[in-house]
Length: 239
Image 1: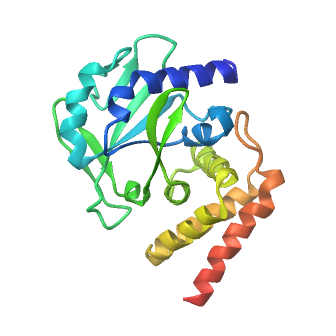
Image 2: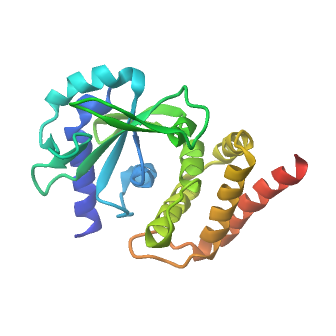
């Protein structure tokens, strides 16, 4: 599969899901975000072949009503929160929940529903809504880069999957502005000590990673990664 064909499938999937992703309270999240943040949504990072859509719990009923308007995808009979493509032109869509009343990023629960059950992740409360975006005619809301960075830096995965999650962090970091990094530090300051330690530990791991196919090469950017780590360590020293 070429990078361009992946880009086409990603954008086709977002078009198919437009009846849902254009709704208030809905954001595209997950590992595909760096692809959409690249210039012209270049989609050069083939991290995984699925799209995660976060649904605010208060928007659940509205989103469920809009599912009937999605064409080209269908709910998995085994897991209705997973929508499978009807053709090779699209990729899988996963619906997850976001509950802004959760105060701990490690608080998770299941919103039970026969048609659209959602696994609600506390870490998604870190994702502030950014400005509405338009990508090749597709209307969507992308989370703020600062929250995306922090949410990914709280990953608990290990091995190859964990490494690829951290390389997604690098893709986000390369797109981040100084304002994004200032916001990240503010969000980081609100975490409890063990979660702040996890963020710094994952940054340290990222600074040592080697390249992976289809992912950004961390070697030319180690100074940027270490710079962020040092910034957070200075914050710790000042507490």
